[in-house]
Image 1 (spheres, rainbow, N blue to C red):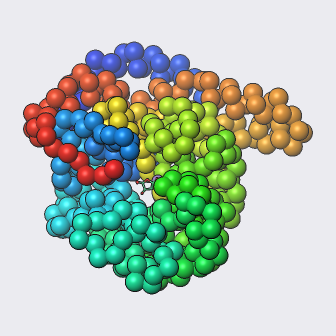
Image 2: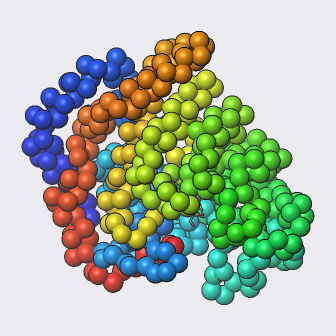
Image 3: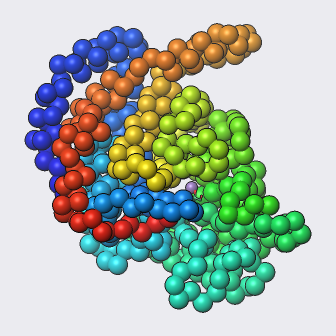
Length: 424
Ligand code: PSV
Ligand code: MN
């Protein structure tokens, strides 16, 4: 489905008077409003191909209607999001859930929609139909060399698909670990995994990055072989300069100080990117910003501070991706909400008075430091986001547009009710 520019313009026209008032007021409060808007205009968050269909839990899945049934339809969905918010101009593919058959045709479609290919993701946490050897007891950590080789080869195949699409990074998330004490020799599991990662690393094109994603628990509940940021950092340090740590917000033990992790990884030049989502208990994969928006802001605050300290380009130098998927919302509405929350947290971080915060820190003034952060957090910056969208020809209110124009109904009309998306 193609959204006509004129339809967005007409919609914006109806909302422009109110927007103008709100925007002028907000801009009057923010000394660097123009700079914030410019940065928002070039910032994009990649959409995971596996989040475009309704997600499930291990107890069941309640599929929605009009889900994208093919990779082409998934691209169309991301194109639709991007047309509405001008901030979703990339897709992250998970293979083999989304194997591109005709790379040139997929590239052409993506180009037409203004979409780039972000990190490609390998999958050695599930057995695929006709797969010779099982990953039941792990992949790269496996005691059997043949299983390890199969997992390495899969990652190399994923790199090949990504390279054909212009992707520049591979995310490796391993479910490897153990469920019971004594099941695994931790040191040997680490060493075998490292050996496999070295082989994958050696297959990376020169301008690629390898993202090593960690997770504290699930599906293994006693140990995970890449269980936390320290372990990931060990791997990425041993692998070399193209290897980085990837932070998925849902992959920590409860109450972990993620913003501190982010700050230190940045300091070490080893932060590669993000899988954004939100959670209350574990890896809940909820909409970004839906549970702990203050934490999200604090993470972005460290990101902006740390990236600026290293002279990094906010929009390009890290992988900004969503990894969320659940079972009750329309996936496209959910993704619009996630992107909005991320843009808002980024905008808030850009508005922090850095000089005042540094001065408060230097004189041990915890009260002033808190005031500076919370003042920004409690200022409604949504009009700046809307203004950035307006200037890019996107919708002032993407979600309202989606609902008002009944875009899901149109997709159901087009695709029918039985399409089921590949993914979790
Ligand atoms: C695992 O929980 C994870 O966060 C990894 O990024 C996977 O690739 C993704 O979710 C989908 O299972
Ligand atoms: Mn993830």
